[in-house]
Image (cartoon, rainbow, N blue to C red; front, side, top):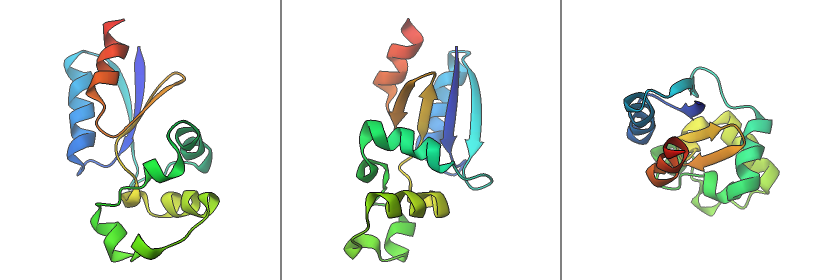
Length: 115
Protein backbone atom coordinates (compact mmCIF):
# COMPACT_ATOMS: atom_id res chain seq x y z
CA UNK A 1 0.00 0.00 0.00
CA UNK A 2 1.20 3.50 -0.81
CA UNK A 3 -0.40 6.89 -0.21
CA UNK A 4 0.33 10.31 -1.63
CA UNK A 5 0.04 13.21 0.81
CA UNK A 6 -0.22 16.80 -0.38
CA UNK A 7 0.39 19.47 2.25
CA UNK A 8 2.96 21.68 3.88
CA UNK A 9 5.30 20.65 6.66
CA UNK A 10 4.10 23.46 8.95
CA UNK A 11 0.53 22.14 8.88
CA UNK A 12 -0.26 20.15 12.03
CA UNK A 13 -2.88 18.10 10.17
CA UNK A 14 -0.36 17.24 7.47
CA UNK A 15 2.13 16.14 10.14
CA UNK A 16 -0.61 14.01 11.74
CA UNK A 17 -1.23 12.28 8.41
CA UNK A 18 2.48 11.64 7.87
CA UNK A 19 2.81 10.27 11.42
CA UNK A 20 -0.36 8.13 11.09
CA UNK A 21 0.91 6.34 7.99
CA UNK A 22 4.52 6.11 9.25
CA UNK A 23 3.34 4.40 12.45
CA UNK A 24 1.61 1.79 10.29
CA UNK A 25 4.64 1.42 8.02
CA UNK A 26 2.70 2.60 4.99
CA UNK A 27 4.87 3.93 2.20
CA UNK A 28 4.14 7.62 1.63
CA UNK A 29 4.99 10.04 -1.11
CA UNK A 30 4.87 13.55 0.35
CA UNK A 31 4.30 16.52 -1.95
CA UNK A 32 5.25 19.77 -0.23
CA UNK A 33 2.90 22.31 -1.77
CA UNK A 34 5.23 25.17 -0.89
CA UNK A 35 7.90 23.62 -3.11
CA UNK A 36 5.66 22.23 -5.85
CA UNK A 37 2.02 23.25 -6.19
CA UNK A 38 -0.60 20.62 -6.92
CA UNK A 39 -1.53 20.38 -10.56
CA UNK A 40 -4.92 21.70 -11.64
CA UNK A 41 -5.85 18.16 -12.66
CA UNK A 42 -5.01 16.78 -9.22
CA UNK A 43 -7.03 19.48 -7.48
CA UNK A 44 -9.91 18.89 -9.89
CA UNK A 45 -9.96 15.22 -8.83
CA UNK A 46 -10.42 16.25 -5.19
CA UNK A 47 -12.96 18.90 -6.19
CA UNK A 48 -15.03 16.32 -8.05
CA UNK A 49 -15.34 14.26 -4.87
CA UNK A 50 -15.62 16.97 -2.21
CA UNK A 51 -16.61 20.12 -4.12
CA UNK A 52 -14.37 23.12 -4.72
CA UNK A 53 -15.62 24.98 -1.66
CA UNK A 54 -14.64 22.08 0.62
CA UNK A 55 -11.03 22.47 -0.54
CA UNK A 56 -10.84 26.08 0.68
CA UNK A 57 -9.61 26.61 4.23
CA UNK A 58 -11.61 29.66 5.26
CA UNK A 59 -9.87 29.71 8.64
CA UNK A 60 -6.39 30.13 7.17
CA UNK A 61 -4.46 33.32 7.70
CA UNK A 62 -3.83 33.52 3.95
CA UNK A 63 -7.59 33.51 3.24
CA UNK A 64 -8.01 36.51 5.55
CA UNK A 65 -4.90 38.27 4.20
CA UNK A 66 -6.23 38.05 0.65
CA UNK A 67 -9.66 39.32 1.71
CA UNK A 68 -11.44 36.40 0.09
CA UNK A 69 -14.42 36.30 2.46
CA UNK A 70 -16.40 38.54 0.11
CA UNK A 71 -15.02 37.01 -3.10
CA UNK A 72 -17.50 35.59 -5.57
CA UNK A 73 -15.33 33.36 -7.73
CA UNK A 74 -16.35 30.65 -10.18
CA UNK A 75 -15.25 27.10 -9.45
CA UNK A 76 -12.59 27.31 -12.17
CA UNK A 77 -11.26 30.56 -10.74
CA UNK A 78 -11.17 29.03 -7.24
CA UNK A 79 -9.17 26.09 -8.59
CA UNK A 80 -6.73 28.52 -10.24
CA UNK A 81 -6.46 30.44 -6.97
CA UNK A 82 -5.78 27.21 -5.03
CA UNK A 83 -2.97 26.30 -7.43
CA UNK A 84 -1.48 29.81 -7.07
CA UNK A 85 -1.98 29.96 -3.29
CA UNK A 86 -1.56 26.50 -1.73
CA UNK A 87 -1.94 27.97 1.77
CA UNK A 88 -5.63 28.40 0.96
CA UNK A 89 -6.08 24.62 0.77
CA UNK A 90 -7.59 22.54 3.51
CA UNK A 91 -4.80 20.08 4.26
CA UNK A 92 -3.76 17.38 3.93
CA UNK A 93 -5.04 16.04 0.64
CA UNK A 94 -4.43 12.28 0.73
CA UNK A 95 -4.76 9.87 -2.16
CA UNK A 96 -4.60 6.09 -2.10
CA UNK A 97 -5.09 4.77 -5.62
CA UNK A 98 -8.55 6.13 -6.51
CA UNK A 99 -9.55 6.85 -2.90
CA UNK A 100 -9.28 10.40 -1.58
CA UNK A 101 -9.48 12.17 1.75
CA UNK A 102 -9.47 15.82 2.69
CA UNK A 103 -8.24 17.34 5.94
CA UNK A 104 -7.63 15.24 9.01
CA UNK A 105 -9.59 12.08 8.20
CA UNK A 106 -8.22 9.47 10.55
CA UNK A 107 -11.34 7.29 10.36
CA UNK A 108 -10.96 7.08 6.58
CA UNK A 109 -7.23 6.41 6.81
CA UNK A 110 -7.92 3.67 9.36
CA UNK A 111 -10.35 2.01 6.92
CA UNK A 112 -7.63 2.05 4.27
CA UNK A 113 -5.00 0.51 6.54
CA UNK A 114 -7.24 -2.08 8.20
CA UNK A 115 -7.99 -3.84 4.91
